[in-house]
Image 1 (tube, chains in turn brown, purple):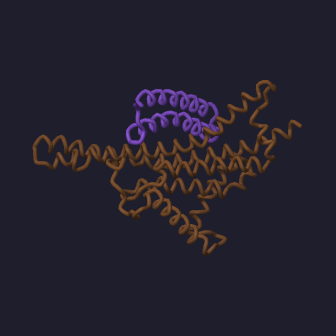
Image 2 (tube, rainbow over the protein chains, first blue to last red):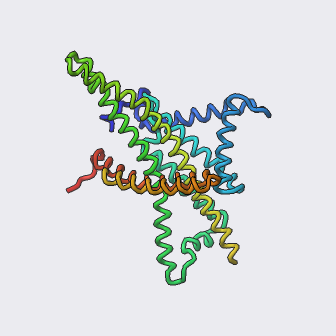
Image 3 (tube, rainbow over the protein chains, first blue to last red):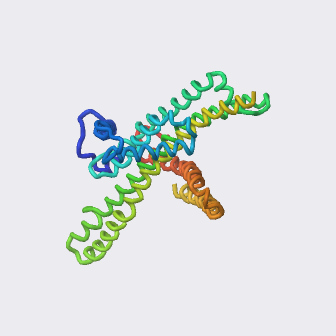
Amino acid sequence: MEALEHPPIFRLPGIPDHVTYTWLVMVILAAITFAASRNLQLVPRGLQNFLEVILEQFMQMIDDVMGHEGRRYLPLLATLGLFILTGNLMSLVPGLAGPTGNLNTTAACAIVVFVAYHWIGVRKQGALTYLKHFAGPVPLALKPLMFVIEIISHLARPLSLTLRLFGNMVGGHILLAVIFLLMGLDGLIGWALSGSAVGAVVGGIGGAITIVFTVGFLYPLKILVAFLQAFIFVMLTMLYISGAIEEAEHHSEHH
Amino acid sequence: MAIAAGLCGLGQGRAVASAVDAMARQPGAAARIQTAMIIGLALIESLAIYTLVIALILLFVKGIQFS
């Protein structure tokens, strides 16, 4: 992929790019929140207003999916969501690398989610009761089978979270890189500027079409995907957490 | 990858079709249906993404030797 994509303009020697840009995302988020929360007002204006609108969206999503007691998990969910969203959007800025375009970053997020929802489940209902729910409401003879299947499905969750985010981001990056390669000085535009008459016509028209296509369609699509993937990651996290909590209520209703 | 993309498109098309159908019948529940639809689409899509990841691994990862 290094051959296709231009390396980012700012690199620290000896440190992988995605780590550098993870730090950059952290610095951006911390600076924005720090600047917004220095001077809190009852009637928010400017940056504080902006952040409050974002957090209210998160709260509304949590209320819709998990109900009111889900608000306890707002810090986890909102941090993950904002980090992934900023990382996704940052990878679209030319000259910067995206932290979410690397398997290590997405795996780290998914493992945090995996540990967190199991931890929440165990905290909520105790380890034994929580483990019992893996067996499900089936006859005793089928319980070992259900248990194994549930364990596998739980292990598949962080894998699918990781690969979904990574694959969407990297797929988009490779698409953009290939289009830029076709469009750039080695491709259509270079052909148009090379001086030959056919090149000027075909390369010029083709280059114009690819530029319009990229700016008008691919970039908005990538921005949409960036928002959508962050949304889906947070939404699935909510579903997992509420699954870990809700089993407790069902259980207590039964007995 | 092409087969995966095509079949994924078929599956997503079915999902979106029934979701739009449900939204047209019950406009009041449109928001909830939309949320459920997006989650379902993400789950369907991840199957195609797995294929993409496998293709990328085959293309770019040098360490694996397929004898």
